[in-house]
Structures are given as C-alpha cells and as structure tokens.
Image 1 (cartoon, rainbow over the protein chains, first blue to last red):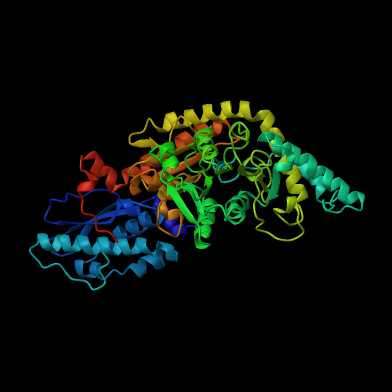
Image 2 (cartoon, rainbow over the protein chains, first blue to last red):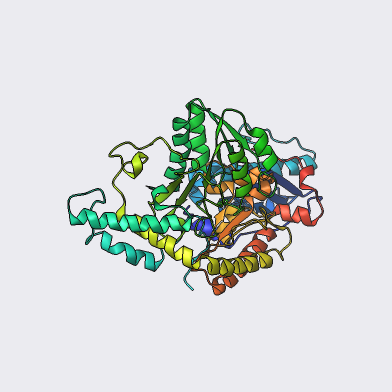
Length: 138
Length: 403
C-alpha cells in the first residue's frame, strides 16, 4: 500500500513519543484499541490548571504506519489547545490531513477516541462529569 | 547491494537467467502450436514440450505421461480437488484437509461443499504439524480424498507426507498434496512418498509465472480427474487449452536446474536462514512460528511481540518480506495460518516471513538482520504494549476498549 508523504513523515519522525505521569491530576490518559486488533493507542494530555490549556501531549502507539501517524498528528494538534477545542477534534480532519485511504479510517477514529478518553480521564480527576459524546466509538 | 533486498521468495522467485534463455526461441522462432500435427512448426513445439515434460517429471520421480500442465498451482489444486470429487463422487463425497492449507485448496474444498460434498478441516498442532491419529480418526467410509500440503507457504513446516500417504493407502483413499513450496527445494518423490496427485508451479522455483502442473498417478492406482477446462482434449483430456510452450520449456529448465543444484542450495540457504533466525532471536520476545526441525530450508517466520507487523514492514522498507498482520489485507484479520497454530492475535499481527532464495547473499542477510533489529527496537520504543510489558503488567488483565 502506498502511504502519503505525511504519514511517512510522522512514521519516520514521530512527534511527542513518550509517557506522562498518569497518576498526576493534571494528566489525562486515553488507552484505546486492543492488541488482537493490531492497534493500541495511548494518548496523554497535561492540562494547565489555571488556563485550561493543554500544555503537553504524548503518545505511544502499537499499530500500522497510519495509526502511528494519526496519534503523532493528534499530539501536535492538542498542544496549545483548550480542552474544549480539543474535544471538538473530528477524526475526518485527521483523515484529510494525512490523506488516509478508506481502509485506514479506523486509525483516525482510534485517535479521536483516544483524545476524548484522555480528556474525560482528566475531567474525572478534576471532579467533573465526563462528557458524553454521541460519536463515541469505543 | 540493490534495495530493497528481496526476501519474499515464497511469494514468487525471480527467473533464473538460464531459464529465460531456454524460453526465448519459443516466442518467435519456434512459435508453433504443440498440437499441430501437420507441419514442422508444430513438431518442434511438441518435441520441446515432450522434453520439458521429462525434465518436470524427473524432478518429482514421475514419468512424463503423468504430468498434466496447467496455468499454475492454483489451477492444479482446483483440478485435483474438484476433479476427484466429480470423478469419484459415486464412491463417496467426503474429503479431509487442514486449516493451514493455501486458499486455493481451502476454496476448492468450499466449492466441493457447495456441490454437496463434505469436508473435514483438521487443525494442526501448535508447531504446524498435523496429528496422524486425528487424520485417521477423521476417515469415514465416504472419504475419497486427503489433501494436505507438503511444505507450508507461511511457516515452511513440512508435514509427515509418508505417514499421511500410508494412512491414505491403508484406507484406499487418494492422497493429493500441494507441493508448491517444496518441489525444487527439498527432495520430493511421488513413488517413495506415496503421492497420487501433486500440484506445483514454475514461478516458485525460478521459472516463469503462468505455468504449473498436476501430477496424476497412472499406476497403483490409476487415477483420473474430471476436467475442469473443456475443449480440445489436451493433456490426456484432463486439461484442454493450447499448451503454453515457452512457459513449459522454462518450467522444464527450472526443474532441471533444481534437480542438479537443490542439494547444495538447501545447505547454503538453511545456513543463512539459521544465522538470520539466530541473530533475530537474540532480541527479547522474539519467537519462531512453526516446527523448527521439519521445515523448508529457506523459510523463517518470526513474531516480534509488542510491535505490529505492518508498522514493522514500513520500518523495514529496504527489505521485501511478508507479514501476518491484518493490516496488510482489507479484512483486518491476521494470518489464518498463524491463528490455526493457536497464536494469539497479537503475535500473529507481529510476524514477518522471510523467504530466502537462490540469489540471496550473505551480505544481504547481514543487512536484513541489522535493519529488522533497528526497526523492532524503534517501534518498541513507541509501543505502549512494550512499556506495559517492561513494567510487568499482564496485558491480559487489561480491559481493552475494542472497536
């Protein structure tokens, strides 16, 4: 399968690989996918308590190039966004940016799910209600 | 070295230059139809086909009369399985095969089921070998065919062919084997091995694509298959269609070369394969799939736990290999062969198949070892599963948010 240049770039130079302290109240963690499906994504955000802005984002992904690129791109987009704006990221924006073919759309869906799960993990730690999303896939 | 390095010789092999040379006159100079009986164009084509038929037959220990040329192994498997079902339907409607067979066998068996037949699909042991007692237990008074491949295309495991044929013979059942990966790589002898029908193809042994053969035994017992391609009655009426003369000539030459060089080649390839495997297994959590003893000399199938196969293939783009990963197909299902061995999906997803060949060099193997190690380490550094494993977390204890 031919990958887009952007997928190849993210695969070769992944942004923001790493691990944040999942015990910290400022950190939200989303872990989606399953090993037997061939894709597991872990996406973490660290939120500035005062401003509600995501000041750091990290990922680790087990999966194909498109899954790695989707999560790498997501961390790029998350940094500097408010939690509200981050919640609005749609998987189709990832599909367009990375030019993912139809069989790889599920990779973008995983990334969106991971973002939402990370935000909700953060919200629960802050004593807030998780945001229900009709579009939730997991 | 030329990149990418070709290590996918189970998919197809490059043609040996000697084979190409043997074929060339038969495209324009000696272009006759081997079935034309009235002029020298036809005679010289027929003579070339007869010679090739001898070369092909000799490699598997058969007479030339028992070779039915086809378009390849897929057609040969179809002709054997559906042809036996139609020819021997009055004696029974039951066949036995194995879940790790090639799709050409499995789908031909499914067609037999659609036509009213019954098929038993045996599951192999964890090492890919079948249990002969299970085979024997699956036989009924309606069983007319056992079809089990010689060497597996994904893991290279070589079945106990003589054990299987003895059971078939004892019960008066025909035995067909898809020997596509084995012929030309290891000694195959239809008499000593007790094989009644055998499929193979030229392009897996440095011959051209588009030509293969079905061996159909003529004595003890005399076997017949119902033609699946009707027409001019070529190939003793079992496979009509103008013979692919250049292809058949190339197939013959490829067989002759294999016969002369196979023994030395197997020693050289298995030494390289073993070195590749030994080096890659120095990495943590790397596993060989399939029985390591009863195996084709040129194949290694290795799972690298906690990395995903397609991601790994992307990281190893300087070598051409295959993966058991789901992502290489649209189905999102990992290799059914590896799953049949009882591998967890995650290990099946994490596998690479290396197929060495006649033109593989030591230098290329050195490169492949480094290249794969680098890619596996890089992907593990970004794998959440690897991190969990290193922290001692049991992945089975996690409730995965599946799709």
